[in-house]
Image (cartoon, rainbow, N blue to C red; front, side, top):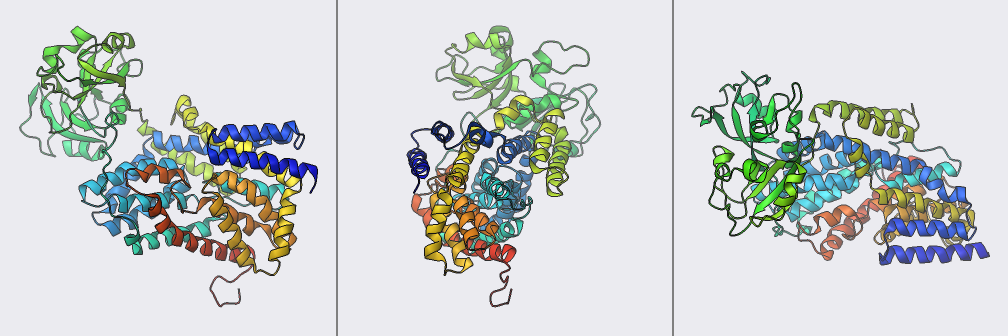
Length: 605
């Protein structure tokens, strides 16, 4: 063994130790490894920094922005709500609908974002239909992870594998090269969870239904403005248009509650609708033509001709009515928030009971959560007011829903351009990300916020590890050792070995780090045996992505851990047989796709 190989293995061992111990963030560890490889002379500066300009790093960053555009325009939310409606009220139907749909979403978005989006939807279904949340959340998280095997850009591991294949001088994989395997795995996972539901514990969630300061629905008032396109339209049409976004609770005209509130009743200018709305909807009202927050229109600063209310320039803040507050027992109108405190009440949340009538007439209770609108300087003295328990920024984000068709078209165009090789994949997705910003589907600040810098830096930092493993000959050395012991093994067994090794290592490392370490060995092993390296590299990446042995192997599993009240053993009981089935399916199909093996057992291939 040469000195550079020993030096590289020492750096690799220290890097793995830091990854496993989690004493430092993974992106910082990757950067330290990069610097160590450079300072020891194993890699030159250009090689060491090549990861940051690599296709995988660019595609990952661009996909984050594309996903942000779909989320910001409400596309993913609408799809998620549609999935919830189609799921019905039975456990088996919910699993049968949610798993394929979630996988399809994860194929074109980030799987952790999809898991976070579906989590409250399934919690609500479980609560409303009296189902055990634990029976629904694990299948959903599994489907989100399996969805990343449907396209090459869904997981960093596949992008890194493709990068390695191209560096080896082999033809690059197209973005749907692994789709046949992914489809088989999604079907396998769905059937497995339907037939093996008894493996999943049946526990009711003891987690609160959402964070107290990130609640599903607030009461607020919408004003039908003088030039509103809703004038003369039926309330039923309004309810259908804003289905799953706004729930009309009461209808006021000239300050009086309407007796006739049928769906065929017609809206008029000046009507006030008391609605239950999410934080995002409250923040997005300014983009709905002809509708305004009633309190802002009534008490806010006069608007210039042709301009909407200054919701964007002002600030939305939420405050909790404190115990023994002087506001308890008094109505919003009696307190006169605008005159006495310089702010306007635009929303209210109450733990129990339905509200009717104008918000200004609501008598406040201890624990009420108020959404306040006003200028920033007016909130500074309010923060110290003993009548409020806390004052925090409002959690809603504006959603430019009218640009949803544009966002969807951009995503489809980016995927199509990459799939047809009209543009190189990284250029196609980068162009899509820029288009999302230029068309204002997502603003530039949010686009930058949505990019997970840790993943970007980690990819840029671990790619040099793979380059160093090849350059020092360490990959070839390990492959030769394996070849001496496995030369008589069949390709199918070798593919299973690579999958299994990656599946175990990814429980302590990320899928990207696992792939960077093992894929060069898989490539060298296949080359030494005179076999096509592609299936070996693909099976290694699949093992890093599609193993479900522990809750720490995937970030999505960590999201559902507490809401589902799962234990470590729950994942082992469900994951061991499933991962074994996934390994056999992946190896079998990879052999068929790239080594000419049989698709049907017993056939000649």
